[in-house]
Length: 224
Ligand code: PGA
Image (cartoon, rainbow, N blue to C red; front, side):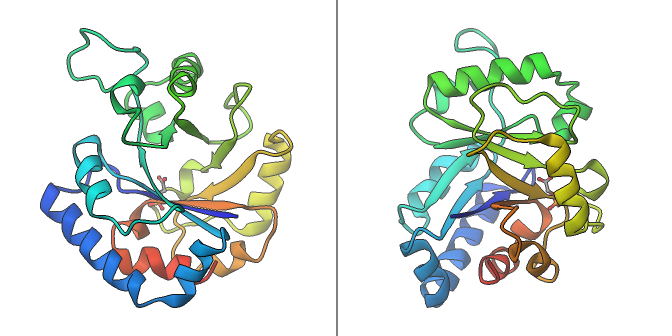
């Protein structure tokens, strides 16, 4: 099973998201090869829009057991009077996955390993599968995390993807538990995906920029 995860970040209005979904569905209907990969459980697609878009995307997206919705974060509060926060309890019925610990949040929102740990435990309580982003082997991986997205900071959004050998060396240092899904993220696109997709060391991809356009996102899927 290969995971292909779209991280739209804070980029889309409702109109943008719905036109993305419309184009995505159309492209998928016309691409038997990708549909076959989904049908045979070879490919799982997880789309992570901002919170305000999740329900609309979920309603309109091509229905398939291997196409899921995820959030880009969740609150470290469980629920209650925390103005502006969106908690795991709030989104438990609309997402199956949640990205957590993205380096942009560690940098701009000063998220620490302790905060991330708390979010992971709340996600688990509400049966949402965390996708934990780590920058390198120094970031903690709490027990029970099944999906680890290794994203070297210099490679995110820069067009400077890390080469496959360096990704594998980093995986050795990060040393994920056996059975953990190891995902790479950092400037993945349809042109450079082939070097990674051949390796059995990498079971998935977290895609930012190239996920914002359904053509390039599915261009990656077609090469997995
Ligand atoms: P990128 O983003 O594909 O634009 O490098 C990846 C990410 O931040 O998850």
